Image 1 (cartoon, rainbow, N blue to C red):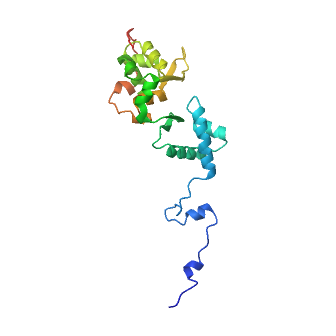
Image 2: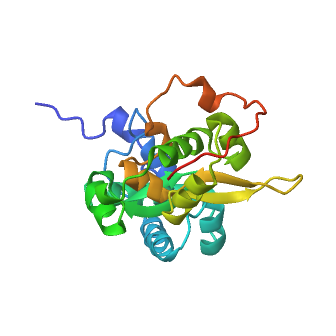
Length: 223
């Protein structure tokens, strides 16, 4: 039997010189070996984990990139590593309002509500729930908008939601009185056992998402 010790298809083969060349060995653009994340990416994800843990607020990609000196794409890739790491763990990397933070897993919401004093013994009143629903579906609404939608004074309901950290003031509008603008918090997500606002049920309630009409609110509200 004659063995061709120098077949033409092997004589034309050249070893890859770069990682890009190496990846082209696979027809789908994937390396034939699972190389995993680079040491730099692993170290960056470790750094991000520490930053998210100590932060007293959610951090944007810009925040994290500025502190670490990395680009936003590099930070985004490292966050994906963290999200994979936290699968089936007690905490997750939550993405909410274009920011990231470490929070408890949604399936642990019952225990977290107990610890935070947000369980059944501290149920929200109808007025507070109505107000919370408007804030949740509008995300960036004022007290006047809420009162025009509900038709009643909502100061007490807003105070209750603020005291329980279910909503927060995100800024103030330019204009007379500079009214505060409200949005939901991460505690709101924990309270309802969801990880993002996209998981809220779709509602066919035009009065929540439509433009408000000016009406004088009645002075009646209970929390």
